[in-house]
Image (cartoon, rainbow, N blue to C red; front, side):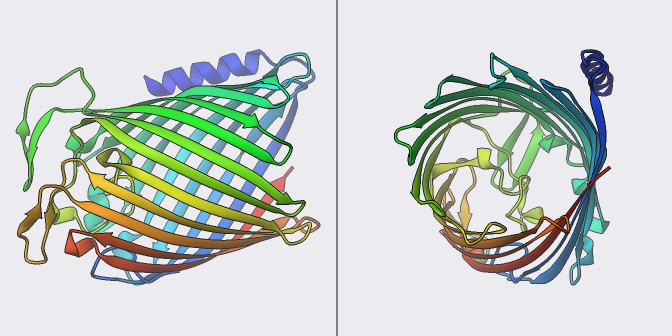
Amino acid sequence: MEKRILALVIFISLAVFNQKTFAQLEVKTILSSMYDDNVNNNLLKLNSNISSLNLMAGYKWENDNAGLRLFYDGSFSYYASMLERSYHFHSANMEYTRLFGEENQNIFNAGGSYGTGINREEYSIFNHDLYSAYVNYKYFPANWFINKFGYSFRSMNFSTLSDLSYTEHVLFVHTAFAITEATTLIFQTDLGSKFYSSSIVSNNDGFMPKGKNSLMPAVSQLTETIKVGQKINDVTGLSLTSKYQWNIRKEARYLSSDYGLISDDELFDDHYGNEGLHTNIMLTRIISESVTAKLTMGIQNKLYSTLPAYDLIGNMIADQRVDKKSYLNFQIQKNFETLGFSVKAAADIIYNKSNDSFYNYHNNAFMLEVEVPLLF
């Protein structure tokens, strides 16, 4: 059904273009290599070199006030010392843009995608299909004021872990004010809800038998974000972001301890499963016309809604797990415009302090990435 809807949207979008539409083939590849000394982000501190290949290829059609992109996006990640963690993901995507207003300053965006994730060996239990769609509209009531609102939808279907399959709906409102020529103030409100495909009862040891399905979301989260951007001079900028996640409904689902060794992705550390304050500061410096550097430091507090904390021998020591994550990220990017590619290097340092001893950890990661866009 979802594929038929996507095909219908593509047909309608192509139909609205006039004879002046310009078609162009796009191809982009990204190669990256990363050394991570704590791949699973826990006390075991397992390390690996991770090589990744990403390929995007498709067509875009443009005219004076509209654009359409149809493209394939695929990625493969290879873990040198943990082959079972290697995986690949493939997706078909559509993006549509329409400009409105006397000067085409207002922007309507919509898109959709279908993707599938394929894992290896014991990790094949995480194989999944993903459907997603979004729509948003940005308009400029005045030169100093920008408004944006939108909606997004995701449907994640796990072939084996069906109790974790879900649909997600998110509404957001974004407002930006130019207080002065050098200072920008941004507010954003997100309201998201997650509906699991089946209704179950859970306890500290894992999932219990299914219960009666409910039309109510299992978890709903309200997120308030405030960001201040400050231009220091022509080549330096500073931004401060503060975000608070508050769970309105708190029936989040977690994997049982049999699969609880990974804590750094959506499945194992779903943002709906915790709440708290996240603050970071970012310094951006334009070193030259082709070189940009960024330094980000942040602290994130996580109070897990229904996940207890344990000691190292498996005794529950608290009703709720509480983490405090401190991190530093540095990245520098060089664009070789005449040659048509860019190179980025990044380093991450993470400290996580938790009342669950297994998740007291330190993590260092170093990455080198090359991006090669091709236009035909």
